[in-house]
Amino acid sequence: GFSAVIGWVGHMGFPFMPPGQHATKHHDGLRCLMPYLMNCTHWQELSAGNPCPEECPFIAQVKPFACAFTCVNVTQCHYTDPNMPFANPSSQLCEESSIEGCGVQAQAGQCERCRKHFAMDG
Image (cartoon, rainbow, N blue to C red; front, side):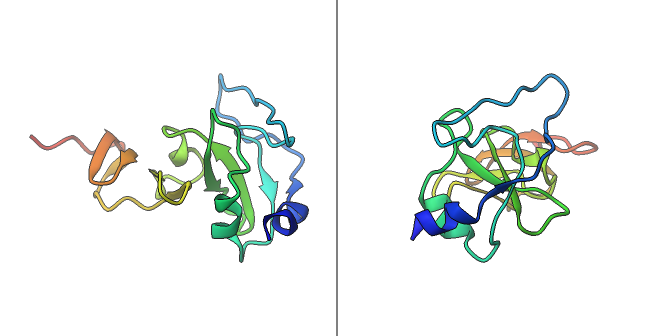
């Protein structure tokens, strides 16, 4: 179950925070924008347990570490991997966007902000 997955989560020991951002602590000890290690075969089970704080409910994989994640808000998915800008509200995971050049995507089919060198059409 979920408790077994959380048992595999370990703090990586260094902050993953863009300039001007501050980590916030969750009641279980998880923080926004702080990297954690886990068993990477259980992404769906981890997200189903909603381990992240309300202010950063999405789970983003921390590249280049295959089994590392951090908790982010809807506009921060691209912080850890620019190719995963979609904060999917169904899975609570940061995922690839189906919209080419999208840098921040909060809803399916709707780009909020373009990646560098791209512009909104229309």
